Structures are given as C-alpha cells and as structure tokens.
Image (cartoon, rainbow, N blue to C red; front, side, top):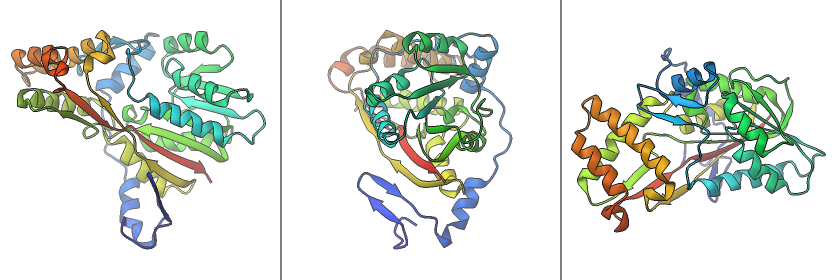
Length: 324
C-alpha cells in the first residue's frame, strides 16, 4: 500500500492515506475484535486509584507506586505537546469561542499549553480525567477551564459537542481502544480536529550504549512496561482503526523523536520510578539484583556522564483526523 500510486497524498514529515480498494484485509485487521483482556498492570492501577479517590498509582504487577500528580523534572516530549497545542489553536481560529477538550487531561499541562497557543482568543476549555485528585491540581492551575471526572469509554457530553479534541498517552491504558475512539468521535462536531499522541510502547524507546549489560537490563524493562500496558501498539492500532472508520477523514500520522542524553535530567522521581520496575523484575527472577543495581548506578554515574546511556524516543506519534 505504501508504494501504490493510488495513495491520496504523501506529504513531507507525514503520511496521509486514502482508503484503497485493496485495503480490505488491513481494515479487517483493524476492525477485528481482540479477545477479552483481563484488567491488570497500569490499567488496573489507574482504575483502583479512581475507585479509592486517590492519585496514588500502586500496582503489584508492574511494581510501581507513585503519586500521579507528580511531574518529572524534564519532559523530552514537550516540543510535541507544544506542536499539538499550536495545531489545535490554528484549527479553531475561525470559530467564535470554540469548545475544546483534553481527554485524560491529568493535571492540566496540555490545556495550559493550549491556553498559551490561543493567546487572546476566547475559548471554552474542558478537561476530563479518571482521577479526581489530579483534577484538583488542574483546577488550581486553570481556574477558567471546566474539569470533570469521567471515563473515555463513557464521556459525559452530548453528541457533536466539541470543536477540537486531544488525548495523549491514553489509549495505551484502554483495552477497548476502538470503543474509546468511537466515543471521542461521538462528542466531536463534524469537521472538528482530533489529535491523539500515542506510542507503540515495546518499540518506541532505544538505548544507545556500548555496554551490553545495560542494554540487557533496558530490554527487560522495556518488555515489562509493554506487558503492563493494556494496548502496547496503541499508535499503530489507533491509526489503522481511524483509517478504516467511516466517521473519520484526513487521517494523518506525523513522527516525533527525542533524545534523553542523561536520565538524571528527569529528576530523582524518574530514577525512583525506574528502580521500582527493576526491583519487580528482580523479585520475579527476570533480573539479578546486581544487574539492576548496576543499571541504576550507571544511569546516574559514569556511563551517563560519558554519553554512554543515551535514550532515543521514537514517539509518541501524532495522529490527527477530522470528524466527517
């Protein structure tokens, strides 16, 4: 399909596909319903936190325990988040007081970027998240926005309600990502822009190092993270599903990559988070304690200082579309 002359267009930095006569098998693959998945890992942790009216993500399967209101010291994906805010702001410039929503808005960071991108333009901004405790922080940051606790699988809004919709790193935690996309499309107005930032977790991060021991630990950790996600191919799955969806047009995927030259840039909370997952792998016999300790020491030590612990992120990917 990539080589076909029948492609609608191929643009710089992005690929936009028309639905092709020979695309049936691909669309059937995208539409195929997966076997029922048990709720575990990160998905279970989020839902358990919501049920307990907490922002503490505590999960034995993944080994993590953290306050989800905490933001790491640095965010390598910030240029992508600013790019999305600018795109949404441009899309609503001709609309008088547009209504925009961030689904799974967390503490409101992306809505804050949208406020900056909109400048003086008035807009009605909405955020929805599963965790009410996160929304308390969002409300304090953006008192002019409207925040509500809710689930992407059952959004508490009428049909054709929003002029734009965005969601970031959401579908990796949603077993039924098709239903989530259907629900997001339902609340969008015809012609509204939607932007999803998602990753294929198992393949989006690469460790650039000459140290085989570090590489081995990193590979085990990456495999573990992917296993703990409800949908570890969220980017490609969402893209294929939107291509096949009768209610979506102008489906486009754009790349994003970033480099983390030194893990310590993310702060001690990030190092602690890494350590929790490595300790889980030690407890289940996947890693030796000495290897986990070595990895954490080098992440803050000589390997990081020498540029031998560089992480390359190939994503999240930016998937944009409009409601037909």
